[in-house]
Length: 316
Image (cartoon, rainbow, N blue to C red; front, side, top):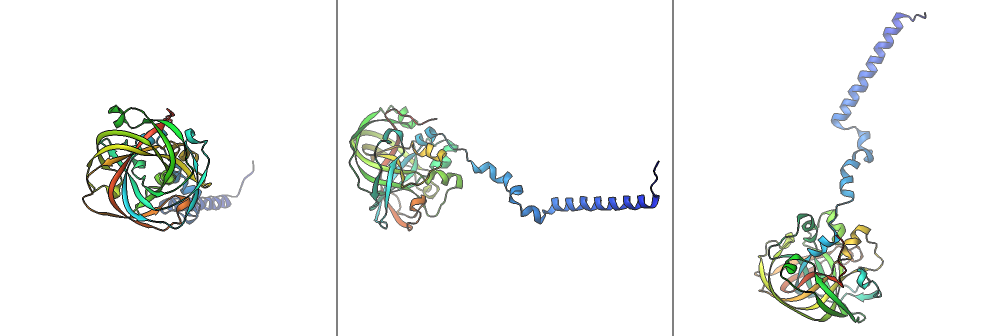
């Protein structure tokens, strides 16, 4: 049997215990206070908190589109700097229409999210649609002659028995693009969707609808405006989703915005109780360089109601 000197063994043991204690104390201190090396390694600390929001849970296309009602207000006239974009259709029903360049003219209306007859969208959908604000600019383009069957998607109108209607789109009249009001930026996962909602509005053959509705504002900036009664009369426009230039749209976002079709009806409504002054800023990447705009809401003139074209219903 080989014998080691006892003194050397005791010294080694004491040294090992001292090293172990130092390691344990260092580890405890690092856990309690956070070491410099761990804070400099983002993959260790950032992943657990960022991962849950990296891919947000989005509403289905049907849930989003069917709960999006926009009340459009006439505004003071404003002409942006000369800006030309190429619009291309996103919805499958009109995908065969050619891309075309359009130049932004006067802004003459702002469309903001509302609820009808006190029926508020489900919370998971409301979180998104309440931040859909569209500033609408006059445009000109090639005439179109396309007859479409439109079916209302929102359950309030379906429960009222509003039937399908046939309409023919003719010439483009407006391009409505996403903005924020008074600097009220939506949460990042919401902004990721609403910044790509661009609608090209076409003149249509006249479709009449004579029904009363009660509207209430959903966006926080206008939440202080009172609930109000409107009478929905004639439809003169159909607004359909487009993309501008060659902007890349994330696939999951595209799967929502391509299904947003709004039939715009004239409405009769009382004047606003107070003049509403707003500052608008563009949030779409293509138009983000345009300056902020002053907008005064003058009178509500139209209501955009969600529809599907030719029985092609959004998924979900």
